[in-house]
Each structure stands twice: as structure tokens, then as C-alpha cells.
Amino acid sequence: MTAQDTSPTPPASTAPATHLLTGGGSGIGAAIAARLLARGDTLWLLARDAGRAKELRERFPGARTLVGDLAEPERLSWALGHQTLPDRLDSLLHVAGVVDLGQVGELTPKVWQATLAANLVAPAELTRLLLPQLRSARGHAVFVNSGAGLRAHAEWSAYAASKHGLKALADALRWEESGNGVRVTSVYPGRTATPMQAKVHQQEGREYDPARFITPESVATTVLTALDLPRGAEITDLSVRPGGA
Image (cartoon, rainbow, N blue to C red; front, side, top):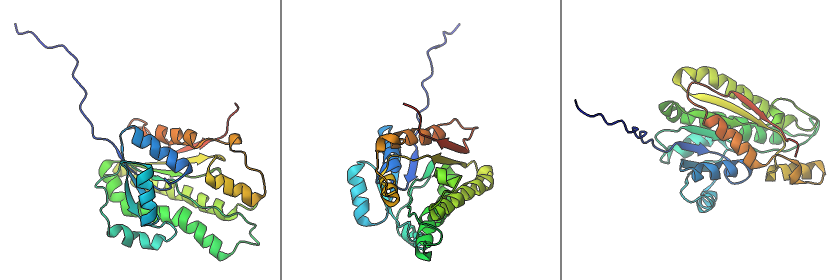
């Protein structure tokens, strides 16, 4: 009789996941970027220009960068077509966004167009351009939306409209790509202590106290929870609100 080796079989080695993230320069995006790099994943960051790309590489050693301006979504195809893209993407993380408050009777077409371009049209175009890489990896598209994507308040019309549209984009994409194994998640943070929130308070004429709001790290944990859910399950929509101390 031949003795059998009953020692545990070591787990098969797996390559680190590859992610592409927008909005990595500050706030929620920076928190997510730091967490992904800390756990050894491969990270690509989208920067609006070469100078910003250099800053991001210095801030996040080991990260790679692509240059493309979300304010000009019609130029993203040309910009990315002149750069080397990742072969596969385990996730595409849409975090970047812009906000300008104002009443409907005051907002100009310029504000509407800039808000919709950066917050809705650019994510749609970036997703379109990178769908082959997402499909190849059976990856995950994550849209960091906003509470404004579920309800609109006075003076938030342009921003809320862009975020309502982003929810519709994610919902449609989920139906279209489910057969390709691509998961799609929308995350709706409440007010979060970020530079954007400081700008909002300035526009509202209110004093800004970051301690009153969600931390970017809490939202990053929420996003990673969706990413790390075992295959075969999908978080579609997830709201995050400030909690009691």
C-alpha cells in the first residue's frame, strides 16, 4: 500500500486585480486608490492632463496613469487611442464629479453642459471605450453616485439631474452586460468630508465642519465591499449615510 500525502494543497496563486479609477486626486477617489494599492492590486488612474498624471504617480507610487479630460468626453476616444491601455480590467471605478449649485432660474446652459459632460456623458463614454477590457475579466463597473442621484433638493437641479442620469446609465448597463459576466454597482454616499463638500458649503454660505460628515475612508470600504463580493452575487445599489457617534 502506498502512503498518501494528506497535507493541505496550497491555494493556486492569483494575479492581482487591475482597476482603473477616476477622481483619484482627492476625497473618495484618493481613499479608494490608497486602499487598492495597499493590498497589492494594479491601479490605473485617469488624469486630466500630463501634469496631473505626474502628481498622481508621485502621490501613489506604483500606480499607472492615463490622460483624458472628463470635461471633454468627445475627446476621450482620441486621447485613449494614443495610449497603451490595460489588457483587462477587474473594475472600472467612476468617482470623479463636479458640482455647481444654483436655482433653475439662474443656471446657464454652460453650467448644465459642463455638469452633464463630467458627471454623466464622460462616464458613459469611458465605459463604452473600456467595455472590452471589462468583459475580458468579467469585471465590475462601479459608479460612485450621490444621495442627489435619488432625490433632488432646491439649487441642486443640474447636479441631481446628472446623478439621476448616472443611475439610469448604471441600471441599463447592468441589464445589457449581465450576459457577459460584468457586474454593475451604484453607490450613493450622503454628504462626505471631501474638498467638493467644502466647495458646496462655500456656495451655500455655510460653515464647513468635516466632522459632521461621512469620511472618504468609509465610502472606500463600501466600494471595496461591493468589489470583493464573491462571484455569483452582485450588490446593485448601496446607500451610505452618516451614522451616530
